[in-house]
Image (cartoon, rainbow, N blue to C red; front, side, top):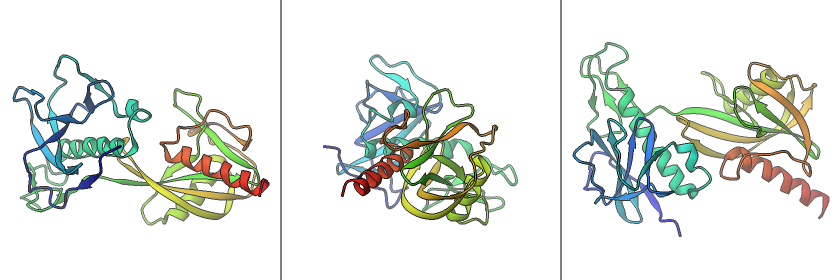
Length: 271
């Protein structure tokens, strides 16, 4: 049974950690598939910053950031994506949280407006410039991910510059001034030349590669012929729900959208 994680209400009331995640240069320290460690792990005074994340199973949990990948017997350094299918979803989300906090702390040590060194905000997860008062929070980029459907078919695509044969739903960032629904319509039109009509919100997922929040939709085809933008899409085509190609795992929002669609169609055909 996976232990429950409760995010920290006050990130700077930092207790002594009972559990920790260790990161360095964008990688996570692992022992096999285990990446949440007890604090008896010897880090030889190498920690450059520590951040309280919350309570895991009722015990304090935080992330330790190292300047480089120390060699520790029995442990190895792995990227977050390699843990996607082996870690339980709540723990994977916790690992993503740890990496995003580490990236924020690394990337905002200096003010982007005036160049002065920043300081930690006294009460929030933020860094503030003492010179011009610019405050920098962890960056989260909202995105839409949409499965376009047409009767018992769904549109799946292989994205350009991806080194795998997996077919997935379309996705794109929300631009300034857009609603999620407007971004969905624009994204489908730009990527594959289709128009969509009815759309239904299906759920969201934090996607820490490096820091997106994915908003998932099922959207019904309303017109147009598939015409992929070659800069974004290598191939896109309609697939019958019974004859799907290789799709993302169910741990991903794309995989969940596709599986939700297939279940809905199957129930409709077999009441």
